[in-house]
Image (cartoon, rainbow, N blue to C red; front, side):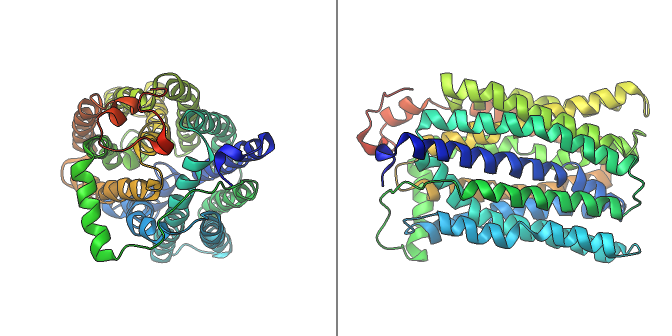
Length: 440
């Protein structure tokens, strides 16, 4: 059944299903934060910055790198829901398994625990990456391009508000629960998986519209050169990927914000809960603000704003290093950095991903999403590079280089055309015969 024939009830189920999945999945990410919990856990086991950043790098690599191949696999799948359910059930319980292992371990085994967090991060993100390509295509065909901004915005706003409680719970578990390491982190990781599994209930509410797909999957020898041609012929798609990649240099620095604050600025480890709260407040604000901007002005305007937002994050951490060790000013500035990091991260869906969904021709959304996320997979190297640079010259040089990369991405993204201007250029055809100047 095509989207145009969906009843009001079908659309209501889709709104409820997507928002439920989005909200609880995002809360789970607060409990398994790649910029807070994962590096802080690793830093309790090793002092090597490269090994500390490895958990975040494996997460990013596992989620981003397989998507181009997942898109090829899904190119002939008329229904994406079975793929989402299958890989979600495989991957989402992994942090519960690791959390229970930590709770039952009885003693501290640094090497085993490090391998455990590395495996859990990669396995979760790898399975979610395959489900994610299908999920993004489902999002693209279940809503109009105007509705998507509102759905994502509401999801981020609600999850951000509820994740404040998750951040408070993290602070309590680490400071006041009486649980020692590694039991405290075992509980945190278990709560992450519980939220991921609750989010699955939303998936079962979604009604999937029918949309034509290719009758035959391309051979890989034809598929890969076709991706190169796509980047060459669709200049807007190339430019948005360059802008996103440059802004993503922030990932070279962000895993070390909390570690720098705790190790070198004397901030208490219990402040991690506050940092997580600040980041989720930023994500909630992004949903409220950028959801409205995307709906009213277009996702290309969100991208123009987000560069400045991201740029503030490493700059504020640098400023925190000038305030004196461990003072209230230090905590406030680092918390503000996490707030702007949350604003920036919260704009990825509303800005970059939504923009790619807008400019992708009908039937090719999995290819566009898979390729854009695989190209950005180079950020898997950023935590390694950041860790090596921090080991060589200190954390401040990492933050300075990240700020320079973000500024370059901001400049590149500022020239992206609106959706209507893109279709008018003739690089891709407007979907479903839609006039190229329809609704910006």
